Amino acid sequence: MNRQPEKKTARTGIRWMLVGYDTLLLIVLWCFFYLLEPTGSASQRGLHLAVLFICFTAFRMVFRAYSQIWRMGAVISYAREMAADLSATAVCALICRLAWDMPLPSSLFIGLGYTVASLLLRIAYGCLYRLAKGTGAFPQMLRKLLTVMAFVDFDSPEAGAVMRLKLEQSRRSASPINNVQRVAECFAIRGNVTNIVQINKGYINQTYCVETLSDKGHVHRYTLQRINTNVFPDVDALMANYVLTTTHLQGKFLLPGCKKQGSVQTVRVTKDGRSYLRDDSGCWRMLSYFGGVYSLDIPDSPKTFYYAGRAFGKFIKDMADVSAGDIAVVIPNFHNTRSRYEDLESAIARDPVGRAAKVEREIAFVRARKNRFGLITDALETGLIPTRVCHNDCNLNNILFDEETHLPVAIIDLDTVMPSSPLYDFGDSMRIGTNTATDDEKDLSKVSCDLNLYEQYARGYLQECGALLTSKELELLPYAALIITAEDGIRFLMDHINGDTYYHIYYPGQNLDRARTQLKLLEDMESKLPQIVGILQQLYGELHLNAMLDREAPAWQDQKAG
Image (cartoon, rainbow, N blue to C red):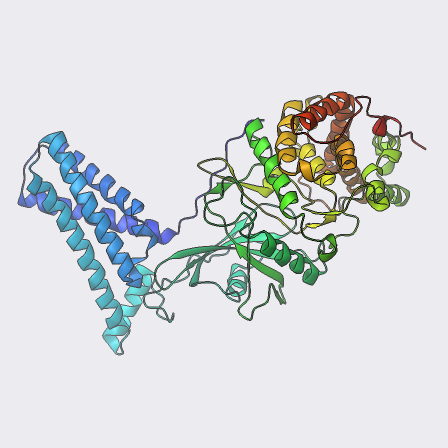
């Protein structure tokens, strides 16, 4: 169950090229100065060089000097570089003085010489760049040299802009990278695109991280997505939901790990002010990007799952003042478990690839529980519980956690925000987060519901939105995880029978393995239902929530198959 956070870094190759340039310059200057002043042993010289390199590189990182591309000639770039170099010189001289009793003038001479030489080289480069912009044979030759040696894009309107050589064809990308660049440049972004990397997360939309460089040398990142119009055919309604949700939550929905931004991505409009771009390659949207974060497919600790519960519970609470009538239904019957069961029966009747006869045991297991699948759907349709605006896809990997504090920063993937019930959100999180095995585990003895994780998530969720829920919602909450687990088992089984037409599979029979895992988890949850009821009843008492539960769970047990 334990999993280390997946840390991601997104530095441009240009910065590391600068580190290489500066390291080479440091070595050359070190050799030159020691020829002038040959004092000290070889080991001391080696240590001195190591300290120089560490100090200068570290201080430039701290001062964000490498975040500025010096070819742009921005004053802020030079200022940060000078401040970093002077600080590094002082620290280096002090270390050499204390560690090896080296004269201060010697260390200061080398450090200051490095700073001056580095600055002179950059000034010289600026002069060469301006000379290369001229006409004639020599400027043309110089222009070719700088294009090859320094990747300068002389066709760019920005002085000293770096060529977009990073925009190579990605082996992981299903779209030509130059087309993705063209799409990205249709949005209101700052600077020129310098890097595009596909993000292999999620199964529906294609997602890219777009990195740009402004005329002042600042690096900016954006999330670019190609919307799956097979799943979301009404893109206008989808994006209207997205804009309404993010606008409503911006500045209001703040999770514990949030720093500068809000806890939802914001929509970056196109240059003509639209929320998305439609062209021959599809429908595209651009969203804000969160850096310094990671996501998890399963909880790495009970504390993580507790904070996940708080995050999704707060989402329900903060969306409570949005009318469900203002949000369009972009996927009808998305969490209608009764409807999903009817779809399964239709698939069994059609049996398009002849697989139904081989899964009779799984079909019988589902049919024995068919009258239980309408518990939440029927309560919604009859008005016993209210319809609320919900996330509807509460996978743990839709929460971003801060790499340093490990607290939740943001909730992403808002495509399925629709009118529904918080019970479905709660159940979906439990289905994924409490499972002690992977979702396609072949050894079903490994599959069970971890009640410790269940309690932690429920505590966080109810602390945030428990007071909002009605007594009837609280009475049905123990069955939420069972219903959603059954629903996903039904969907995987149906896709297997249909010939694997919806979910992507990596090996034959994976959807059947997924279905069996969900059905085994449902069976384990059924056996632990009295304990689940006990956990929730204790939390209701601690949080002063008005609901009484029966450990016999009659709402589930009394349902008989027809």
